[in-house]
Image (cartoon, rainbow, N blue to C red; front, side, top):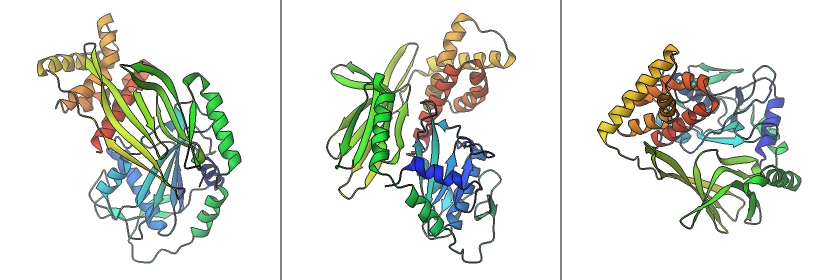
Length: 377
């Protein structure tokens, strides 16, 4: 089993990006340009390495390899994006890798790309790239190419050596468990061993509602691979497990005018197998709440007026300041109730909310995370 933190360290030791490895400070698949560039790199790495894994490391400064981290990103729907835009898509896995020196809400993103042996190309136009385009790696660059020759397998031995040096051992596992339990001791930290091999650690603030146990500020890690499986500072989560599996149900708190409810968002089940393997299954459970259209029109117009005041630098009233705190979720609710322009307005608000306060910006990112999960399902 590969320790993904060690794998990243060994990849970064190859300081120059090449035909099997790329590094990014961040990616943005919420907009067409960022989505197109990500797809281009996946396509190029898949075509350049038909017989071995390729990798993208995210959250690293390009010039000096300084690890700065990125926000936790849910992988569960990223394969849907790949399948929608690429012909002969590779198998793509996005994992969140915690590093001890990073803040709790930051990780390093690791994208692993496994080619299927066929030429990958864009299925349809996106941004400035045309459907049918084929990309290959040219040194550290992903370039459009005319694919008329066989790709020589020059990386398999290098990648095999890197992965071999990143194998996990008992010392790494024990160190990981003790670090997690000590670091999260204020949040009901626990661990369980599955199939005498896998160690899952989790922590969260516990509360009981109508005889049901929920957790907030949840952190769940598969210690053997140093992979963070789940992290949320805001949502409520229920956790259940048996000897073979670990199940998480994530809830989101939505509502209008103080009448909020928790709605099921997504179920994740990690199933551990006897052959030292595991698989993760996710299922969207979310059914968007529906509200009175007249009430929504009033809230939508209020949000738009607040947005205009922020653009012009006009001081908000006390009531407007309260409404601003709800703006990300109320725009999201409006979108789920067929106010299609609400998401454009929320994107417009992003830089303004980021400037206004860190807490507001967290609420914005949480709203966009929910949207992304629903959209790519």
